[in-house]
Length: 322
Image 1 (cartoon, rainbow, N blue to C red):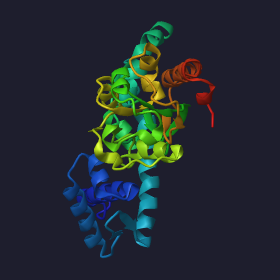
Image 2: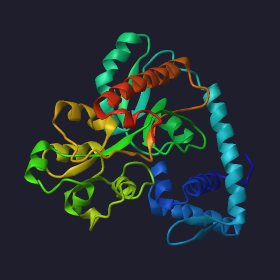
Image 3: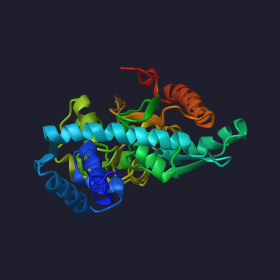
């Protein structure tokens, strides 16, 4: 190995590449499973070794210098080539289930109840589902043994295949008891900030109150102190609080349709807004036949769900609706 590419330099380059991709030391640290301070220090050591800055450090983000941008491009191409070669050379598993990393709320409310049908229709394909919502790239998928993933986000992946299989609609929901106890809640402008139940991390990089802010903006409504309500890190927890009569959650149709159909939740007003995020099936390019089978099954299930969603909520939430 070249004397330039010592183990220390290779470690510095890995930290730099992750930081450059995220434009953030904290997110890079989360990907590399080390502390933010360690990432920052290793990048600083690389800059000192090169005798030139690679980042301009601003209060909001890291900005690459021209030299940093040049190095980022070369490292991205190099790491992708290495990962592609390792994937091709790595001995495939003779058997064993597919590891599917899935957004937890979607896994609990939508996917798990349908898995019995998958196993009955495809007994030759093993599948294990793990509830996770961390950001993904090809490096992390290989390192963590993830074969494929389902994510609720904006679908932006540089080095992975991300296929949209189900769009999403946002609709305020509450328990019948909460609505009965608040007869003044007749229209969107009647909402109070303290009533709103939030999923504060709907997808990687989203603002804390992104979903409610999007819905209120589309509804043309301003609410005083919209962040005053309870906050959760999973949509399912916010829905659980709504079921318990603690406020109004912004339900995603895939997660609340069954409760609406059963009357456990109701819509205080029938105003649905298309979500900025959707559900994506994420996998490496050149997926195996087994992984392709899982994606095809998910797409077919999404079509069936869409028909059910239209039946319960009306034609306004049909796939591709405005």
